[in-house]
Each structure stands twice: as C-alpha cells, then as structure tokens.
Length: 323
Image 1: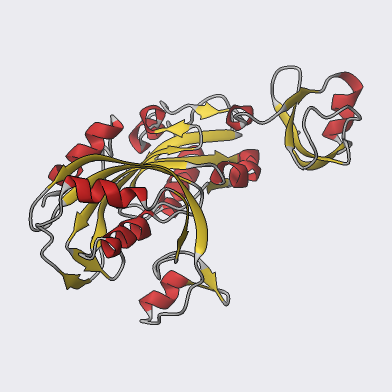
Image 2 (image 1 turned 60 degrees about the vertical axis):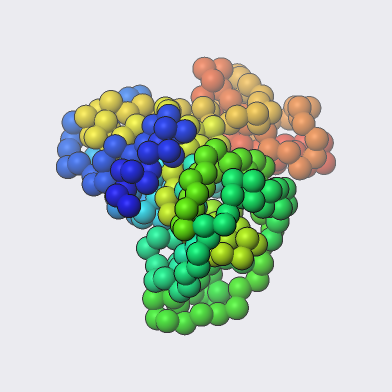
C-alpha cells in the first residue's frame, strides 16, 4: 500500500502530517527569534533520524549546544522538541512527559522489528477479526502494563544498545518494563485478510508503540505489526503547532523561551538581591510552595527561568541554574 494511502486516516485524525521526507538545505537565513536559548517544536519528517534533525538545527542556527528530547525512529514522523543552548539542560524534564500518537496496526503479519521495516516472520489469515474483537482487546492494554523492549530499541544491555546487537544478529534476554497507557482508543477499522486498525494512543515515557502493536496481535492470535506512526504530542508540544524544517530554514520557526515548558510546575518569582545571589548559585530562603520532593521553577521578574530547585526538608535545593 502506498505511504500516502496508508497514512491518510492517521493524518486526518491528527489534523496534520509529515509534509516532507527529506530536509531542506540549511542556511544562515533560518535564525528564529528571540535568541540562542530555548525550545523548538519541530515536525520530524519520516526518513530522518532524531540526530539528523539535531544536526540540521545546529547548521541552520549556527549553535553547537543542541539536543533532542526523546528519539523518534527514522520511519516515524511527528513532534520532536529540540533544545537549544542552555535549554539542553531541560531535556530530561521534557523527555519525561507523556506522549500521544496516531498509530496504524496491520494484523496477520508479524515482523522481526515489530514494524513495517523488518523481515516478515509469520503470516496468518486475519479476515475473521471484527471491529468489536479489536476494541475488546484494547481494553486489556489500558493502564499500567509490562513491555519487553524490542531488540531494535536504544535500551542498553551490558553497555551496548540493543539495536547494535540486533544488527549483528544477536538477540539477548530483556527484562520487562512497566509503562502506563493512559488512553487507547480505536479510531477506525478496515476488515479483510490483513485488517488494519487506527489507534489513538496516549502513554508514559518509555512506551514502545511498536511493541504495543505486536502484543495486541499476539493477544488476538493472528500477529500484528506497527505499519505507520505519527507522534502528535510530546508533553505540551503539539503537532498543530510544530514547525517544519523548511519553516525553520526560512526563519519562520518560533524559539520558545525556557520558561514556556514548565507546564504545571510550581513557580516562584525571585527578585532583588535574592535574584542576584541565585545567579551565583545561592538558593533563596523562602517557604516552598510545594511538598518535599517537588521540583520548583524559580523565575526572574521578567518571567525568565533562572533555576530549578527541589524542595528538601522545607527548603530549596538547587538542581539547575540557568542565569
């Protein structure tokens, strides 16, 4: 099936989709305002790795300190927040947020990579599957579940990435990991010998949607693989607001300030001498607005992010100082 046909239902459900599969030429004209520190909400096209996008941003902006916030497989399109400058120190907080996807699952075919890029391992006639069968099966995967990371993942075993071992034809035992599926909704279903289901997935960090598709096929005893995937949200970054690489190169992508990614994190404005001391690594002596263990954002009078701190014993312990 052609890629454009396979992705129609996903793109329609997401309200957008990958607009190109190759990066445009980087140039000096693509420097977005307001400066070198912040977060870009980019639309990664299929055919590029996440690191390819990082390199493109480095060349386009002329900035060395650039990092992504969670790998997207080369064949996957969608939201990829990119941290620039001092914002790279926020990457772990952005990466830990929930993710949302539009997924296409094809039943009756099991592959070595659990997606459409691997070798076919088994085939079965799945024409007996109905929409009701799939809808019921999805209820078995709601909430907290266990997943075994696929061999093509970036998980490390004894210091080596699983995908590196997979390239050498080596398969090793992997421990199951607990992840949370917050929402798993059947958007559409196309019956036939190779039925196709279109899913809305909202999940925790570390969830493998390809493994979800594979496990769904195993549960239904016909096999399945992930045949198309678009990430529609990463934390608060959405597909509808993501900029293409063409827009970045043309200077039309907005570089969001670091404070824009704080979400519901408790915030404290620090002013005067306390702000100056904070800039030199001295935590303000204030009553924290959150319980022990919480992370608090410390902002300047202009709303800029000065630091992140953790509430410990009723006081603030600095985690990151950005000023």
